[in-house]
Image 1 (spheres, rainbow, N blue to C red):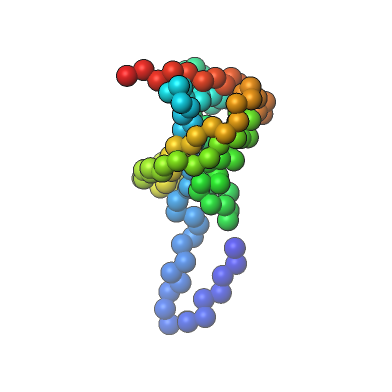
Image 2 (tube, helix red, strand yellow; image 1 turned 120 degrees about the horizontal axis):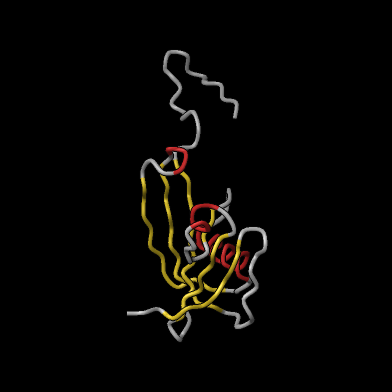
Amino acid sequence: MLVYWIIPETSCTNPPNASHRVRVGGLVLNDKKEVLVVQEKRGIFHEIGLWKIPTGIVEAGEELLAAAVREVKEETGIDTEFVELAFRHADNSLFRKSELFFLCMLRPLSTDDIKKQDLEIDRCCQDILQG
């Protein structure tokens, strides 16, 4: 990004680079109280065998709810619709940036078999919530 500050007697107030990262997760819960989870192909979560909800980065110009629906569809092949939203803020996250994480509760629309994304996802399944 090139910036020319047109008021010479003041200093430029533009940040040197992005200060936040915006991520989204899709918590897909069906009528049987089963939650859709994935295991990643690489990274720390893969190494420890952690099951997690589909997550990803919100793309430039993309709405949060659309990003959650997109990530679930990309990673599992399941179509969903928005139900509820929660969020959290974490300071000093990846690359020492602040992170905004939006968790979207989604309802599955498709009942087709789960189709995992081969690039990022190792395994997908639905599991019953305990408790």
